[in-house]
Image 1: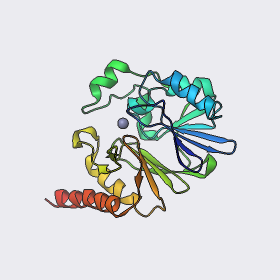
Image 2: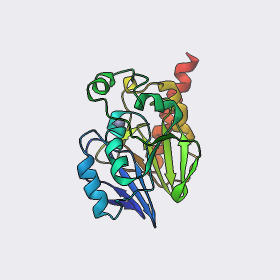
Image 3: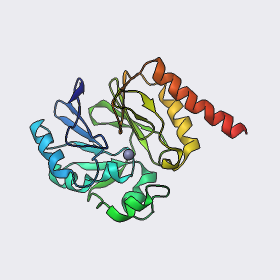
Length: 222
Ligand SMILES: [Zn+2]
């Protein structure tokens, strides 16, 4: 499904969104979905003319985002990139704390062979990487033109209403609130969370984000 000029939401990935930016010869995948979906994702990429990728950007280390990175990286030839602080989790040098630990432990997706840390913040295709620690330590959002991909900083309902994730889902809930607030000055029109429908950057979204950040101030003051 096309969301904006050059921006697609893949139909093949369910539960966790996988996005494609296709800007001329530059083809960037954002996240790779739950394990077991690599074949369907690769077929859809072929259909969209993006069988050879330029880069795979991972918002964070959770396995519903990195689950098919090994297979997609191998088939597409592109290196995968993730925030430095999330790298040890993908390599299984660190265990994911919190409620998702059991799933990670059972499924343990294979790390991509070409996995690099995000070091530059100006990426191919004019994509900008924005460090947004909170959901995980090395979480990043990505801005392409007027579309902001925010990973698991928040989620949305099927009717495009912003929703909070349970606090236990986040490794650093207090840091998350500051990272959410830091998104507001970016010039985006559409916010694409990894779970749920894309959200317009309207007053409801901005109020939601400010309320989340405001709660952080109240909690830390108490
Ligand atoms: Zn997720």
